[in-house]
Length: 144
Image 1 (cartoon, rainbow, N blue to C red):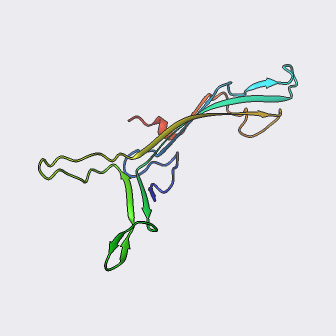
Image 2: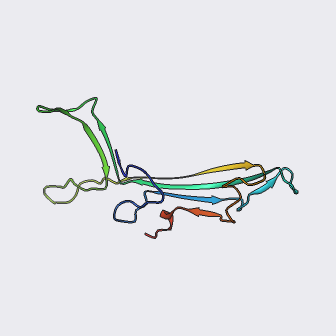
Image 3: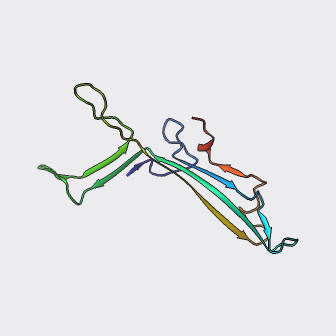
């Protein structure tokens, strides 16, 4: 189980402007790619490549083990072992009153790449971006 139940690059989570998924596509060879095979008109194929940055976060991540080693409960039979990863400080030192440990949300980021070779003509999504080199989801545009 996790919060949010989905990762949507265009929808903020909760009251704050937290985008749980952010995407950035960087077009490495310009808006229309590179004409190849042959290099003169008419060409036979167009080549293009992108660098893709992804960042994401689970506000709450929960794993339940109800099948194996469980905590006995005389009334209901047993309770599942539960592991929750959430940014909540709920364990305090009884003497000092200070919080013990930390439990940060799961965050991830990675960069990958892709390329494509297409024939000439109208193929939606290839060569129709009006030279937009960097495309970003809304989360990358929000200032923290």
